[in-house]
Length: 105
Image 1 (cartoon, rainbow, N blue to C red):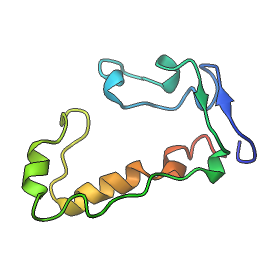
Image 2 (image 1 turned 90 degrees about the vertical axis):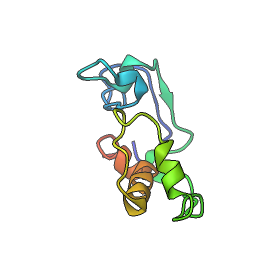
Image 3 (image 1 turned 45 degrees about the vertical axis):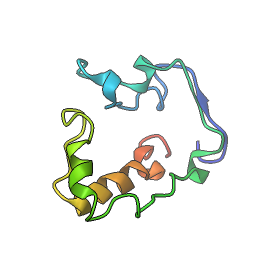
């Protein structure tokens, strides 16, 4: 899948079998992308995709306490204990190659 654009349309494809831990997965033991989507289209090959640019000025020591109090449901994603843990989570979320590593072989 590294050298071509990709679209998937089946529950048994590598993309369809990707685990999903979003809000929609609550209540399901083994929730996959195929449980919520009929297909998935990539506009480029997986090896050429990249995550978003992380804005490191978005959160800082001044607004951290207010931000952590208003973070979404901690059952979905554990609230970070500090600003460094927060940025670690954000960078991991933006790492497209890591997220799709089980597909991009």
